[in-house]
Length: 154
Image 1: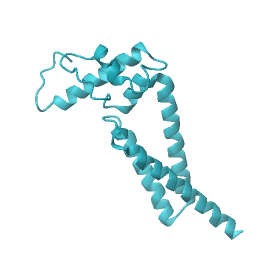
Image 2 (image 1 turned 135 degrees about the vertical axis):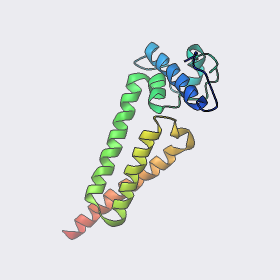
Image 3 (image 1 turned 180 degrees about the vertical axis):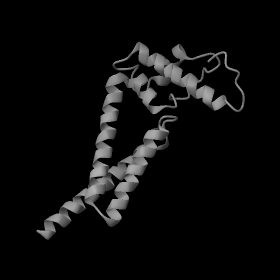
Image 4 (image 1 turned 180 degrees about the horizontal axis):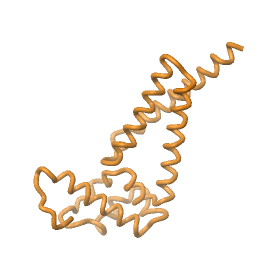
């Protein structure tokens, strides 16, 4: 990547690839627990390529960043959390109708967007965690409203 001719057209792509390369290097050296949560910028200098010396705070790929900072253990925990969130959202979609189904479908859409966008950036630096928490809370309310409606029928 140090031999690539950098232009205005490819700058962002090459810069991201340099950061991905650094994250993979960190993971390769520390596969189980990574370099420590929040230590990507600290460890970056050791793995930086060519002209890409500024750590930018994260690897511009959340999954690679997790591998770098928390290793396989951290990435596995995060993927399990995502699976639980998707499962709950899908469960609520199936059990509800009307407004609450729309909320659950919105939560599914938000989760999918988060997963795809995090391949190229880290949305959690933009307070996405607050939106995620709100949607998960709404899913819980929707799930409880279905339980209350079901109990009132019997």
